[in-house]
Every structure is written in structure tokens, then in C-alpha cells.
Amino acid sequence: MDLKVGPWIDDMSGGFPMSKSEFRLRCSNVCPNEGTIETGNPSESRAFLVQAFEGKKGRREMEAAEVEEALRVLDSSLSHIKWRLKSPSKHRLQLDVLALCTEMRPVIMVDYGGKMPELQEQLCALLKLCQQESAIFEHLRVMVIEDMIYLIHVRGLAEYVKSSLNSEVELFFVNLEQDPPKMVTQAEESSLVTELIRVQNLFSLFFPLNEMDNDLLSCHMKDTAANAESSTNKPIISQSPEFIDLSSCMQDTQVTVPTLNGWLLGYPVVYLFSKEHIADAIYNLSTKYLRIFRILVSRSISPNKGSQPEELMSFSVPYELSMGGSKEQWAEAFLAQMQSRWKNAKIFGGHCRWR
Image (cartoon, rainbow, N blue to C red; front, side, top):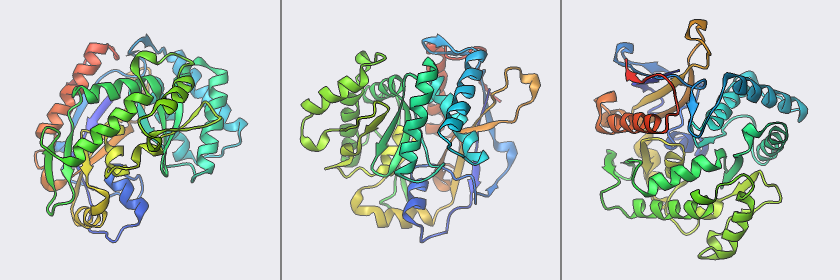
């Protein structure tokens, strides 16, 4: 599996005024597949080379046969519930589900395949069928925060939350309340960073690492709701065990959904601004060129099969704050974190290196 890390320059900039949904996607560092023009020198790109889906995945090895089974069950379940996804959306869903099942990512945001609430209903129905057919999907859940919807790996998310609170995951923030935006670290004093940590603590209550057994999540969520520190922090308990609503985490906080998304989706750089400064953030971001960093993966069992790289994830940083590309401090820290995590957990076979 090749993980190629940019840089690319995206000329989405200068397009204000933007719609609320466009701004949310952009501030969440989500790079749309359509309408994006990549420029810059391809020779500047770097590649992070590892072996992937066919390698080890944390606590257990996911064999090639299991990957094929996961895709078969997913396709069969899509047909059973008559969810007719367009080809690009179906391809995206397949890759996202594999990323979750192999614990390559703990959270993915579903910004394709329809609109709420129908999208939520379709995902819950799909996941229920998949879990009935195969244990590969047992740790996956649908999560909603306000009008954003995600697929999560509950154990993977619990581990990620714990590592975040223990400062094992180093985050850098782009303060969009200033013009020009400024890069700040988590160590620097910031009321918004403090509030984000408070939200992370709420997630640690809902996803306790030492209690992530197969059927424990729904029971624990009910216990957590009964003992939450205030009524505004209680999750909404659904009749469906596949569904979790954590919109309550965003109440009584100045943390915005785009900021939360940047952390949840595992990006090393997170856009930071309060609810009181949304208009400032829209202006300050919409007038800036962005550098896009993409991670591409290959699903082929054999490298000789020549499968095309696919985008696993991508994130953006204002161009003026990422002049060094992959040599930026945060970029090198992000790479070191990935190398350490994969090496220590022995998630993948083979080796990893810059190319």
C-alpha cells in the first residue's frame, strides 16, 4: 500500500461567499473530489510506502479472504436494502469500511450517498445487515453529531481518544480568527483548545477503552447517560444498537463542528475558531490558497497487479503556513506518529519509508 503525502495546491481559495456546507467541509479539512484543481510540481510530492490491507491489523491479522468477504457482504447488503449508490460513492464507502475494519482509521465522515435523515436510516440498515452476516463488522457503529454523520470503529475510537488525552497524538491548530491565520500548538494556552479537551473527555466517558467488548457498548452508553455530569452532556440513546447520537457533546461549548471534525478524523492540523467568530473564519479561509496533503492507498494483494492508488484521506493547510510541505514540523511529527503507531502495533507487514 502506498501512502503518498502531497503537497498539492488547491485553488478552491478566493471563492467566497461560501455556503454553510461548503465552509464546513473546507474547515473540516475535507477535500471535495469535484471542482478541485491540483497545481504545483509533482516532483515535490513524497510517498510513504507500507504494505496494507493484506498485512497485520493490530490485535488480529485480516487476511485477503476476509477483505474479500467484507466487500462481498457489503455489496450484498447494499443490494438487499436497495441502496443504489452512484459508482464513486459506492467505491468511497467500500474503501472507508475497509479502513475501519482494518483499524487504519477509527472514524470516517460520510458526506456522500444522500442527505439526513434518510442517510442515517440507510447506514443503520446497512450496518445491521452486515453485522448479521459477518463478525468483521461487529465493532462498527453509526454516529451522529448535529447534522454530521460518521461511521466509527468503537474500540479504535476509544484508543484514539485515550491517546489524544495522553498527548500521544500531537495536534497543530490553525487559528482562523486571525487574519492572516496563525499556526499554534496544543501546548499554547487557548480557551478553545481547553474546551476541545473537555469534549475529548466526554468522548472518553462514552467510549471507555477498558470496557470495549463486543456487546457492551449499548449497555455502557445507557449507564453513562444515567451518570453524565449534566443533562446537556447525555447522549441520545437510540433503539438501534448500531446508532449513537453525540450531538450533546457540542452543547455549552464554543468548539465548532469543523474543529471537532479535524480531531475526530485524525488530521494533524485542525482549523480552530469559536462559534462567535464563524464569519471571521469564513472570510479568513476563503481568501487563502490551500495546500492539499493526500494519503493514497493501494488495495492490490500483489503489487504486480498494478491497482490504481485510492485516496484514503486528505487534509488541507493554508499555503502560507505550509511552505515547507512535508518538511514542516507538524508534517514530520505526523509521519513519525504514524511510523511509531504502525511499528509498535505491528499493524502492517513490510516496511515504511519516504520515497
